Amino acid sequence: MRRHRLRDHSINRLIPNMLTLTALCAGLTSVKFALTQKWELAVIAILVAALFDALDGRIARLLDSTSKFGAELDSLSDFISFGVAPALILYLWSLQDLGRIGWAISLLFSACMALRLARFNTKLDNADLPAWTSRFFTGVPAPAGAALALMPLVSSLGFHSNVFFSHPVVVGLVMIGVAGLMVSRIPTFSFKRVKVTQSMVLPAMLVATCLIAFLVSDPWDTILVLELSYLGSIPFSYRQYQRLQRQRSAPPTVTTDPLDADHL
Image 1 (cartoon, helix red, strand yellow):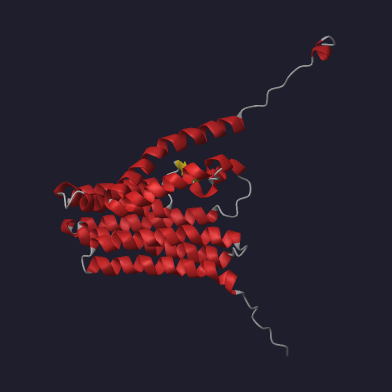
Image 2: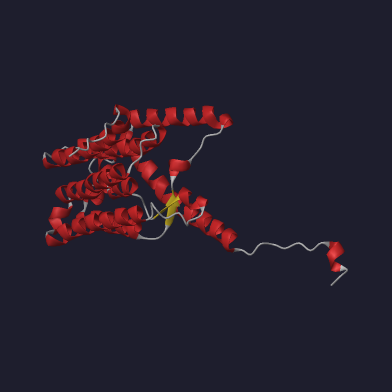
């Protein structure tokens, strides 16, 4: 009987999965830092996980190595890095002072992240949606949800342990609000399809340089400004989505030829 050998894969096809596993390790490492109360490093580890999560999909498309296995691995990594790790970090940092209620809020956040990722996976094979819908997410995506949930911790680090931001009630309300945004049907911008025109290459590089400079010199305030800017973009994404949807559902305008009007 002839044996079927497993098909060999080139190293290029493994690179996206290796990046995904790196993001997973960074997310788990953030929990380790939280257990030793190294909150700055815990937040940085989540940001590193978000960076690798943004890279793996793009590199997979560039190398033409997208696969069902990679998509499933990416979802599992996202759940650990952006669903479980932030919930544990915030629980250890502040929510444990609320006792059972604090733990329930952490569970709620993780559950909403799982539901958000499951809904996203079910839409991957939906080819009936118009092309413009690829510019939007349904609800807040996983990395953005983790970043928004960590806003109280980032604010506390930026304002030198302000008591207001570290209050467990404030932290709990922020987590509940972000959990609701993740499972909501509010359209949010997807920056994966953003294309930079030739005339905007230099301005985009200047903006990126300024952003990196601010991140190096004043990281926590810069991260907080980025988080608030993302929140401020949600009303604009909702309005643009509604406008595109109205254009799609509007009946086509029919023009009548003046020559045909004589025969009516």
